[in-house]
Image 1 (tube, rainbow, N blue to C red):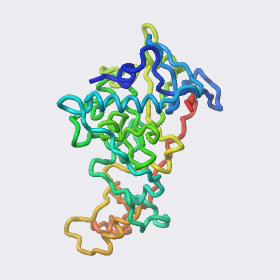
Image 2: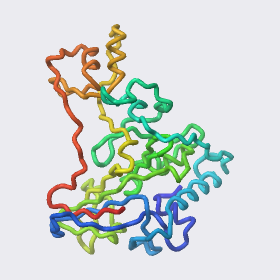
Image 3: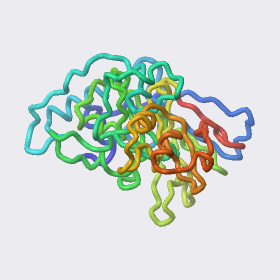
Image 4: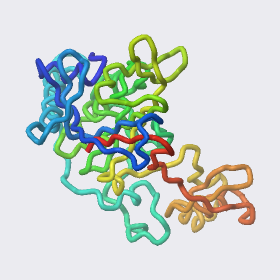
Length: 328
């Protein structure tokens, strides 16, 4: 099994690997000495065969073709299934655009149009609320399907393989399912690259200008438990984070780990329990425990006067002084 996405893609590209596409913008502060960040999205950067540089590509190359090839090759070579060549081919999924993802996850606001509608897309048992490297959470699939052997690249952390590309989730715009990384999508037979969209990868640093060519030197230092950029005999700590691209904000459903979203086992009022399950309006009790909505607190025997309403904070800001380089 491959140790990185780049190595995997290299099997079908002898010289260059089309992974991402780059364009550069600078933050309004303009102070490049304060630090910088690079954000990648799924359109195309050329990884040269010496492993040292990234170069922006025009529209002449499509990563979707590469990813489709990668998926079909993995399946046909049996690399995602135990016991020799795979006989399984990717299943054709219904081409239904996700228009009401909150109903699927019982996360709609009280006045949402689709709150009381039974969603045609049901939550899969393998979808869990997972905290990503931006300390945000979303419902994701982080295990392989039952027909495939356990895939280490799907289930492991990026730090285990010293590969930041493994921390980039992908979301299907057809099914609305988000996978922890490409390999989780592949071993769940979701290989229609036309509808798989990766999240952006943002690499931020304070005190060092982050260049596209620096990514080859991006390493995980287990001693200090941090990602670093190695420059000659020195290194600097950087902060790679996977960010939801604007095109997926209406599809990816955020969540909160530790959220109380069910009634207590002995609760008997069915009407309150139904309301607990029907919409999202976060409240917090005096102990700091979060509930899906006030009814979920009530059916867990919390007094209403002990509740405060809260909002999920936006984490889209780059931070004061940071220089942002966005890959569009």
